[in-house]
Image (tube, rainbow, N blue to C red; front, side):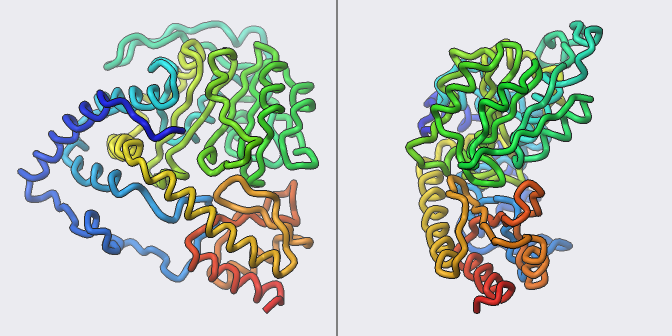
Length: 409
């Protein structure tokens, strides 16, 4: 995703943020911690710990954190916490639309891309009863005007096995059948088998895929979109998009104009380092966005996340620096593992999936005993272990513990 933004968005954002900064200066009770601006190490607030002795490589987080511009923006907007986030939402939507080359009515922002997954499961999966898909009129919002009619979802949820599991539970809560299709020999999505299982509902594609860090090649993605029945929605989760550098990978956002049944989810949790702030969005055709809106909580995105996101999108260096650091440290870790005789699935993300050549559970337990947290067990790949790429000292600590557990010291 390019790091260009609309100048109008910057002006609007500066005006909104300026009001908060002025109020913060006028309010001595609002502290502006110097370390947030100076880059010095921050200390956890009273009553909280940072688990200093634990190496956390379990959640595919960005260990380098948010952009300094995002931290500064949040600090200067503390006083805006009393306001609903409508104005900032407008600026963020304008900015995302400009970056992605779409109209603003093709953007829906949400409480992390996790909320997007939940909305899609609610809107496009459910029992196949013919009596449950009648439109229901809804009351208008207190702010924002009329709501689109609610149409209950129906149809199967079709996913790869393994993939990110959250959306499976959302579909099951919606009383939908879930069909798991094993990844192919290259750890890509088996497009033909997923298509053969399609019957209305939703096909979920995580690309790059979690937990395998593998991609589904662009020609296969295009084939999927070309052949998917129009009544079947395709959700492509591009949470790890910024880390993928293979010539065989592409974002499918530019293909939305030709496919009314395509939704693409993105997140600020990964390359932008905002996992704890919870902000994501999706891009789709306007009528598809309208199908999602009735399922969303009003004002589900907080104002701090929005100002951080807007500032992050205006930081031209943050993405490229994150990509470089991840690539360098991943190369180091993979080299050390290969020297010990362990290979990994080719990674296009900020984590690796190591083939242990033995059941993974004892390794997970052994690392935990040495204060190293890695990914959970994935039953479809019981001999593989997912490890997030942390900072180099964290990877060195992981490798040391790995050698101890495997006896390769």
